[in-house]
Length: 293
Image (cartoon, rainbow, N blue to C red; front, side):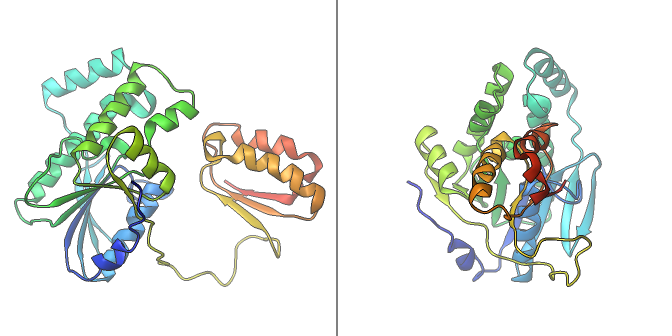
């Protein structure tokens, strides 16, 4: 079941709510953070401008609360109890995985849950919005005090399969993500593909909610670089997982019919050399592609 519930954003605007966002990415930590960080930044601004009270809890290297465009952002550096530190250390040694493995996942989730519980002593939230990334809600259980909504920004078993990442450490990270999904009150994804995968493979009804259209900045009148008059754009991470290699192959065919076709690629490679592999396919037509890393 993967109904499109995108109108939920409009319905949400009709009520003034207190909403907590749990995330492993936010621009306070890295201005070049990925799609999750960009989404949380934009949706929190949108909700705040509609009169909602919004707070962000993000994993960090420091512990402090800062204001970001009028929104309270709780930056959380996790300090694990001694027995947890021993457990996480053993876990990382025995079963290493990508991005710090399951040990880092547990560290992120533990810090966010403690910070949220501490904040709840002063304010009650109506909604908690978490992400599968970093299993931010691993230690949350269903509560009568608030509704817990989890966004499936991605699905790790698909990522690892495509990236050819295997081993018990990777499987453990997938298992922790699955626990979060089953603990949430509502699970949604921004795409029908991910929603269908979660619904069918993990047996959790996953809805489709598209990110709201919200332009938070004014378009620049003058660009600091030259662009073709007409062009196609490919942006985000560049690599096989993103389909960049397929696009590169398609370009070689498109140029046979339209030699003047121009493209702009904007984004960082997933692994070193991913863009160069595409660049080599194009030969002399590579001048038709402008890359902004």
